[in-house]
Length: 53
Image 1 (cartoon, rainbow, N blue to C red):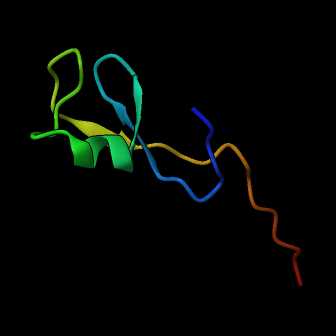
Image 2: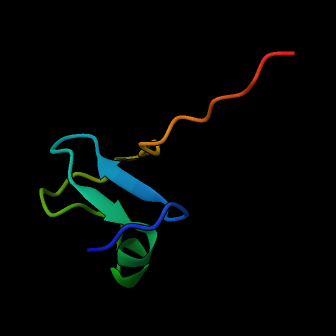
């Protein structure tokens, strides 16, 4: 699975499996393969750095 920087990923709170928004929209109900229904939004691996004034 190729991940772009603009993709939104969610991960299961129980098993930690990452799922994209497109995969969640294809399913009839929002549920992980482990049966858990609670997801959290994953953070991007790149950290933004802002120059101080």
